[in-house]
Image 1 (cartoon, one colour):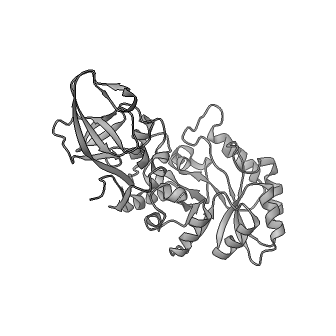
Image 2: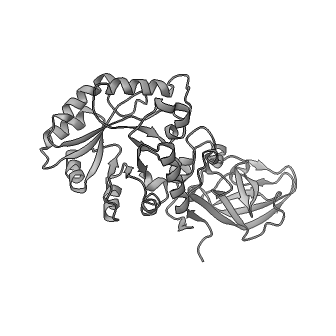
Image 3: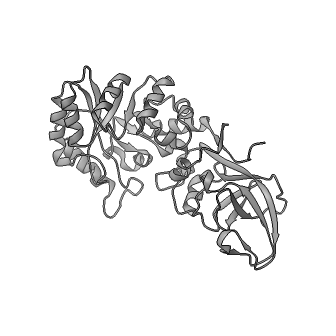
Amino acid sequence: MPRPIVATIHLNSMKHNLARAKACAPRAKVWGVVKANAYGHGLERAMRGLAGADGLALIEFDNAVRLRELGWTKPILLLEGFFEPADLILMLAYGFNGAVHCVEQIEMLEAARLPGTIDLHLKMNTGMNRLGFMPHAFATAHARLRAIPAVGQITFMTHFANADELNHSYLPMSEQIRRFKAGVAGLEGACCVANSAGMLRQADLDQELVSDWVRPGIMLYGASAGGKPAAAFDLLPTMTLGSAIIGVQDIAPGDAVGYGSRYQADRALRVGVIACGYADGYPRHAAHGTPVLVDGVRTSLIGRVSMDMITVDLSPVPAAHLGSKVTLWGGALPIDEVASAAGTIGYELMCALAPRVRVVEG
């Protein structure tokens, strides 16, 4: 019998969230972001769940090739572009779009002498300060690309640092939009600027944020990037991590639980042991009080997370027993809430799901 921990992927919820993304930006085409194994959901499953997207975007070349082998015929965008000249041959062969964010990439394109054309997304650095050309250098980069015979369509792209906090004290979203518009002034081409957080705040921005292509990521998987709970945006969870109680301990006041004996009971306590630990992707740094559902009843983590097990207070669930069902996140327990209690974000929990966890669809 397999260990009871299992991740259930909900493709209908993924389809619903894609429809919500389209509703946020009804005039834009949608890149469904599937990097990091589709945020831990599995590339093949995400391809089916996001079949209605206009294209898929990711970072990994091998997974981009796999999408083609799985039958994806619509556009594929490599969000970090290419890393060496040989990548350009692969991009041409498989019809990949790619980001261009530095002079060195332009130089590779100029030297490549490719026998066909590649569509590109020229990236502007509007304040994130990771990848992209500064606004004042953007037109020059565009001119160099436009002079290369192997370059097809050029779409203008940027990435927002603080879209979940529109009026951020250091870099409000309006300032990034202003820089972007200044950088593309006088240039002809489509724009791709809105990530999940930007799309979820589209109503607040009205006509200030206009995008021909949008790049939803985390919202497609039912977590929030818009400063409010996912449910407030009518997003449905696409991953449920479940397990079961595999042991029960009755301890006395003053007894400790787990490594380091960091949790000491202040009363007589029933402790439930759950088959899930940091080797499964559950965050080791999750604190006492991180929420867990046992037989649908909310309780909390006690003691340190170990490699294969966590322990919970069964006081709110007196009927709990060996085999009682556990929800670690998903369904009635939002992944963002678990992540917040563990001092991280839902993205990390999804992406950290370990290969040893059995995955099913449901």
